[in-house]
Length: 246
Length: 324
Image (tube, rainbow over all chains, first blue to last red):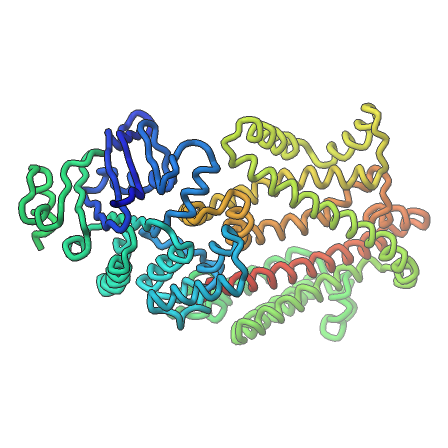
């Protein structure tokens, strides 16, 4: 019997008069790895930013880890504790060392002691394979290293689900694989993940389910083999032919 | 530093045409004034004879000597390294200033006699009034900046009304309004608290805008990262946003500190015995205004220089996390 981590029902969202999300339904179960792809402006980033309410939805329900997301600040805080997020531009805190970046979450949210937080931080920095950079500042690291630190920072909160918002889009080609390797490692260890990405090879290798979005709607979803081997929808075929052309 | 262009260019002050133009300009300028009656004429006595009778020849000789000295000086400085250049030019300007003050024939014993009181009473009051005001103004500024950035209509309206009002009135008028106006409402207020209140409110308004722009200069992504970890507004502001905004906020705030130090002289109009007040009153009895004004000016300048040094030190401190 599987357990629902994210449950999205009939969600719609508007920016002013412009409808970004139209009637989206999606469930993510524990341990599931989901890749969301689609053309730019299709609402995929907006959708996952709704999962920890960096964006507010106007219609429908989102339930994360059993907690419904609505305007009550209390619920939002509870949800964010359980949801890790990795951004396209890393968004590390530049005035703190790498180690502090990883320690502040547990220390200030969960009230963990400094020694304890340090131990956790080093453990996860080890896991993303950069423990030797712990005392440097983010600007001293390469893009790939920064993104791995960002992953470690999220992991330190020991979230129930990790959201990745185009984690490799801002990286040099050489550095993409080190981040994808880290993410693949996470997936192997059974982390529940939702990734917005254009890395189709990663999707093929890691995803349990690939979701294709267009114009704010989920157009098609399926296992990677079916999705890439036999896309049903015209728009999906067009997108895949564009992206796999090179 | 401006962006240092790597294309080598010749030193401007070593180009012959530039030196020639400079020489001609200085020569013409000093030829236009009759300096034979000044101490410059006295210095030239061996060459031009009795200065007052030397006539056109004297004027010509003096202007020529000044122009030669000036150009030689500039050309020589052009050879020195940057640091030496800065030091020499500073010292020369300072010397010119001293020479200027010397022409007032100031009574040094009078200055020496009054200086201790000017410092213990005047400078002390000036510094403690501005120090307290700057602390209060900073607190107001943080609150004001948060209010101006909030989506709460009340907070925004109050903050923008406040900044508009206190930036829109002359500080001198605010000092009068608070000192003379508050008693109308039943609050009898002493001169010193009234002065501090006026300075804090006025500078709080300016600094609100500085803090607001500093906070706004921080990338949205920092807010998103902080909030997505689960930090509330308070922690995000105090631990994530403000520390990053400080390097942006500090240079203009240092400006405000220095400006505040000098604007505290405005509270002298309500009878606070600060530096400006004493400078005017101490010299009055014996008509030695200039002595006291110049002493006070030097004291203001000295404290300002200290503040400048502190500011540049803090800026250097915050520049560290930006070094690659």
